[in-house]
Length: 85
Length: 394
Image 1 (tube, each protein chain N blue to C red):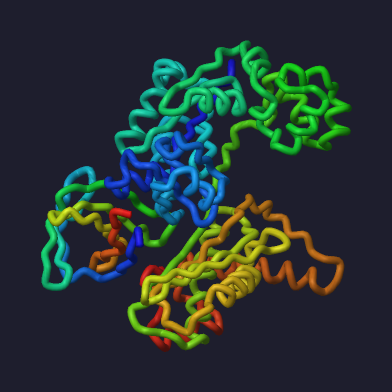
Image 2: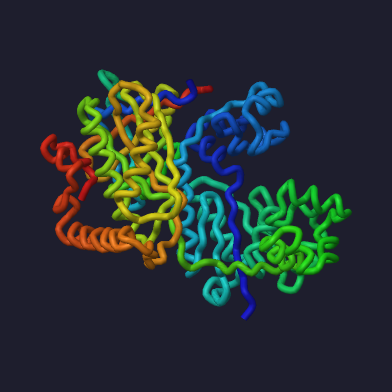
């Protein structure tokens, strides 16, 4: 499957804030900690209320994940894993 | 003052977003679609793959083609990001999913020339979203769109004022907006192959052949476009969604959640002054499988009851499994400006329609003032007892 939908609530996400916005730098999934090596793409779905921020990230293992943060929620979601195809 | 329209068209839009989202697809032949190709990357186009082609045929043309299922909500978010940049350059921007028309008339001194402004907009879009857009400048929307198409990919086309007629004259007949394969066949039977040949037909002949569209074609084949850039712009869809924190399979509760989402989306619709013709429902199950269905309405509506009825039809069609859903999304599509005028029927139903519209406006006023939870319909009252009101509900 090209995109595996995970929809997991992440136990912990480390986020960097800067004047241009914010970005995830690290997250814990189960016992494993993933370091974000690269933000591939970012977007904000403002048609939703409250808006949802999406990030495609490449982590230190080389995997590509899609993370999401809905404004006001106290957690981040791991939406999907994008495979090689 | 001469009119100047800038048309922007994102190159291979869906496929480009997917290549951004997954860098491993960069430089590869990919197509976005389910059954039918909605968008193909330029690498895939080299194999002859085009939008509208069946995925099976596309795979025969390019066996290494990667077919990616579409994620419309992500594409919409990307285009909105780009449209925000457009809105900072022009007072009137008309947007579609992967295209925008900007009325730059009268902004030359402000931006220091239209060509420079167009290049800056292209660069800003590329920087903020990573997407490449082709641009076209011309005296009207049709000319600007044709100039952008001629400049694809990543280019900027300019048709100087006065050159519109000669520019369109050279084009094959199929390139003229409003001429699809059927009309093109009919015209080619009459030995009309280029736009210049179409000018031999007078207004009445074209109207006899194609009805109201014939009158529009009469203007278009002369490089004229009567459609102005619309100041009022509206989104493609208004959607609301909820992720369920607990396992929930009770049909009454799920339908109550659906009603709550419809009421919330309906209020947003009315706030935008729009009416809707299609309600779509997406159910996402705990195992990650998604099911979607939509239901069309006979006429555009802004009333919650009619919207809910359509959404319920769609929901019941989509809900083919007994499994517990993880999330529910309602999207109102095919939006049109709501004239505000209510046309009552000449019987008791007419009075009821007027009363329902008045009730809707009163409900919105109360909810705007005291919050979304201040008024609950009978169905959604159940959610308060279960503490299941969506977290986003105001």
